[in-house]
Image (cartoon, rainbow, N blue to C red):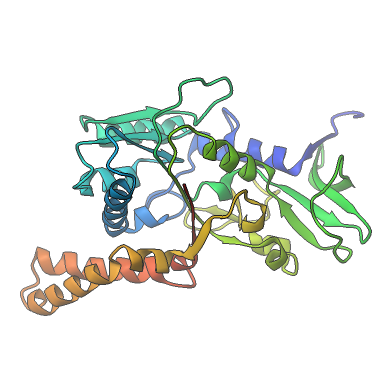
Length: 338
């Protein structure tokens, strides 16, 4: 390239914005939590972790009670979900060996501090790195809001073929450039100008994880829909940016200072996972029982206004947030079982 002009494929740009060793969003300040940039289900409160602990116990029973029982959480962030599960499991507690995988050193250290002294816990910066011959024992792999953060390519239909979005870096800033795609594209022809995500990395991650020895269940939770559902929509409706608990700006704005995510294209993932909404999933592992119990406690203790009453009110509020079909309840829970 002449002068300082440079072109990056869009997934290369996203990867740099999020994971560059010094300048990436998740290497600097980006994180989940009330003091971070966005709230995930575990960060809403303790209810999600308690319910996931129930699920882990039931899955352990279904697997025939393996000992040790290897659970790996990839994209574990500051350890909020892990803390909820480790503090809530009952039947599988003695067998449980829990590994938190988090590429952000800052978040991993937060998780270490949070879980210091907890038996059966290990930490890692990478899941199945290249050349790894001894991965953590994994009967169950959990990934909450991970796939949407894996770098993705963007294609635009030319009417009779496909072009690929690149980012031009020049002295004047960042801009979009469309270039012919190298190689074959596994999508049918669509009207000119239509954009779709091409989630090669997400597919590769799932394929690699499904190939892990001893794996019995992979559970991924994310915003998800099909490629056909995304195609008619404007691309910034399925590509989202976040910063400071609000929606961010255009993905080419402020590289490294905002999160960049993409709805997960279900049809681009391998295998045949079962797919239900988070609201349905939580109903199946006991959220209604938790709400009924909390409502009863609130009726009895509200006049007193003690700690039990406050906990009950918090549980009811958390349940509404976790099952809201327009928010977290609309997430999809994808499960591969074997």
